[in-house]
Image 1 (spheres, one colour):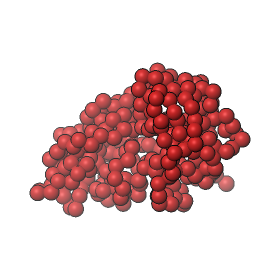
Image 2 (image 1 turned 180 degrees about the horizontal axis):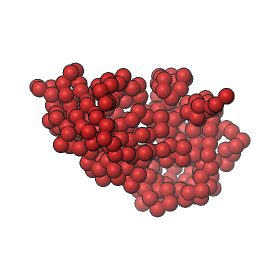
Image 3 (image 1 turned 60 degrees about the vertical axis):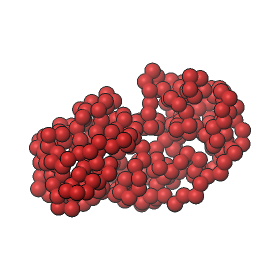
Length: 285
């Protein structure tokens, strides 16, 4: 019997998973290097869909002390039917919320204390490694390239493809955009995103101060379309300076499929269910 690869990939979602990396990984706190290692491991705690870096404790130039904070209250996770039958912990769930057995720790370095920024997993496969909160450090480097948002997943793929498909985007029956020259992004575990030339956007776009980061595409700038007398905040985004993997979407406009209606080649699609369906903006789109 044939194996569905997505189901196979997600079959271990309820377990602690790890993948060794051959990359040189560095973490900086201000100008001080706190981590410099070639023996890092990507770590997914149970139900986490985004990994953390776990580094050998001897490569951590900091002290570790028992955590001074407790995890905040959080829901049991988010149901994403296209990914798993179990609720997942998406990037909006903070690092200090752990689903693996282990010991939360503070990181003390450079005269600073980073509360709950480390985690010693009680797993023999990860003995001697300390998982770190990506967001607690100023800069992360994979080799000599700055890494943003979270560690890159080696099993995550981003395909940026120009297309001639007819894309029509509507909101409450009002036309937002229409194009025969979209650029489509096919990204692992995410719905297809339709990036359109600015000239094909019919709605007035008001620039927003909102910015988010994607590990694979870079920093996104947001737009709020004005429809009649109503301005819908942060419904669209663009990448003015995308990372090299996503160079093909530079300055194109995408809308949240979760919040608008997509008509593709005359067929109206159902709105996908993702972390952006009902929650505030997280880290990537």
